[in-house]
Length: 160
Length: 172
View 1 (cartoon, rainbow over the protein chains, first blue to last red):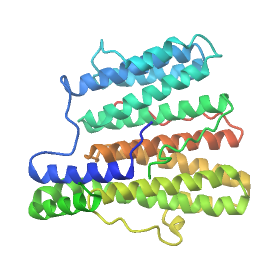
View 2: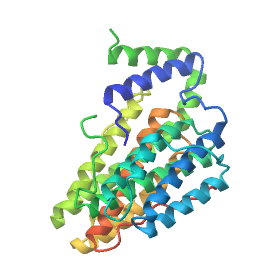
View 3: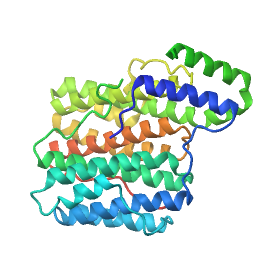
View 4: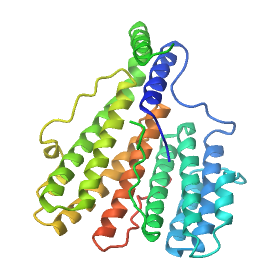
């Protein structure tokens, strides 16, 4: 998940304020293809996860299919690919005993969504990606519980 | 050498130099972050009280996590050269769902109130995405939203329910 350090946050914020007053805004540059392209990458991630969850817990897979439908409705571009680390982790999920690999896939997906979020311009699309990120975090906790591990990792550990 | 103080000072000077442009953009999100700090402080204070009253380790753990969420949000405001202030006394009284948790009389009641509180907090965080501009703030708020989704799962699990209760997803 995200690891913002106090120094990093302060530095980024201060530099952002400088940029804001000088020549631009503090949001990330949009990629070619705009929101449909960013949402298309998020859709590819959700589709990979849906396939993996089908082999572990179909009830969660059903939620992922709902995510895919919501992204399509929001105008996500088809034909994009998920990040390579997500694809590699998903490929290791062959059955219900592969929860650790699925957890790695969820972590990779979380990082991908967190990095996509500031690139999204539309308010509704941004809210959608935020909700998908939160849902993914919950799925990770579900896996942590199943694996007998702490379901409440501190995302800010050692950074504040 | 770039120091924290130097960066903050330079940013403050730049804001002063172009007040109209900077103020308009920053104002769109500072109100949102202050509101998130308010609800986070209320939740943290309520978890603190409920943990002391029930001795529940999961409530105690979440009290500490919410404290860190509040700190992360304050650091985000500092990065915009805005002084966020500290958590006030009796912060739990600022939110009805938090107050219900603070006043829970048993572990069972506290878990039910905590689940209700988390279900209320999640949409507040997800909805904040609409008004945030700064990339770093957006990612900080997303991380905290993920934390609350996980807290909801852990609380449901502690209450003997299915952990899965993800936030509503739609393309509104």
